[in-house]
Amino acid sequence: MAQNAMWQRKQMLGLPQTAWGGGILAGIAVGGLYGLSPATVWFLLALPALFVWAGHGLGPRERRWIFGVLGAAVLLRLLVIAGLFLLGDHVNEAFAVLFGDERAIEERSLWTLNLALRRLLAPFAYELIYSAYGKSSIYSVFGWWQYWVGPAPYGIRLVNMLMWLTAAVALHRTARRAFGQLPALAGLVALLFMPTLFVWSLSVLKEPVYFLLTTCTIVGAMTFARGASLPARLLGAVAACAAVGAMMSLRSIGPFVSAGGLLAAAVLWTSTRRAWIGAIVLVIAVAGCTWAVRSGTVRTRVMPQLRLAAVVHIGHVRTPGYAYQLLDRRFYSDFWGDPFQGAKGMSHAEMARFVVRAAASVLTVPLPWEAASLASLVLLPQQVAWYILALLAAAGIAAGGRRDPLFTWLLVGTIGLGAAVVSLFNGNVGTLVRMRDSIVPLVVWLSAIGACAVLEWTARCFSRGPQHAHSR
Image (cartoon, rainbow, N blue to C red; front, top):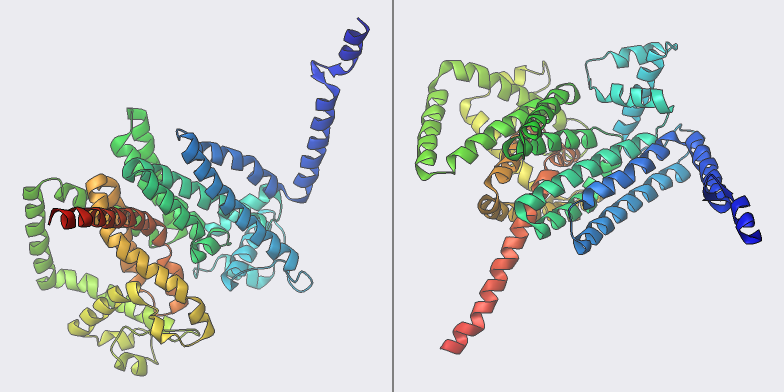
């Protein structure tokens, strides 16, 4: 009896006093952490849900692999963010940045926040907030986020990291159903640990938001096509349309790439279902291209866009940094006055050469033997990795087309239009690498299944060799 009474005194509302003490200490710790960094608390609360979703429906062994990869990815990124915070020069700078563009985004988002709070700003801040140059909804998104949690220049990195990880998990689950366990795991590892993708994923840039919206478009289209129920299909269609609409205010070219990728995927998927359908589509495409080349109306619409691309390219070439040339040499010496004057005299042959060189540049630039600085040497391993990914992706299109044509063509359509935009409107190696990395997160899945197909073919060849030799 005495022991029971003592045990009851040690309990409160059915819980031991030790549990209450631990809960109180945990609450104090969480409250203190929330006071220091609300963004960190929200990130830590969202992280378990992400892991549960990533492991849902997987076997124990595969779940351990996924949790290990995600855990390592989160830990490494948190260490980098902590290093930026601890090693940053906070005496001369309000926050540390990895790139100059990060500072512009962080400052512009804080100015947007202060404007919403009706605080006075410097005249140049008003000018930059309403400037058309670099206009994007990303400033409002980050501004409103900081409206609720307070100024959080490092917390924005956590938000971007969470968006990147969410998109990675969504694509992994989609690729797993389409291509299988091993290609999906390989693609996830490449997506989370490739050097430049690793940096973009924790940066204060548009890349994580753009990647998330692109993923929503592709996964939404897959759900619309193969959802288990009508509500699921409708939800997939709404998600894809909403993602395309959100891109309009994020990047002007984003809706063209995403919506055009869906349209291209639909055409490619339809064309490859039956041989006679493919033949009809091929004839229509050839006839349409022939008519477009001869049509004056089409030329008057396309030529100005190509001239604009040439003007933007020359502008990139003339900016500081490691540049590369796509136009004939005369354009780089004559282009000094009005930006459009140099491109007005472009002939059709010169435009054709420009388009062909641009298409090749997105695959080859920067060439390893043209490294002219320490920065370009640092990019050399990344460029070699890109060459390998591109070669494996070519094999992956064939292998993926046999496994899941719909998902494969969705990837190919979005990659193709994204590569076209990146190739035409660039002339600086650093900008090209950053813009090309907007399609690399999709390329890795084709590369992963391509690598698996190559390994399977190689193993099959080696296994047949001894048998053939023994039979002889």
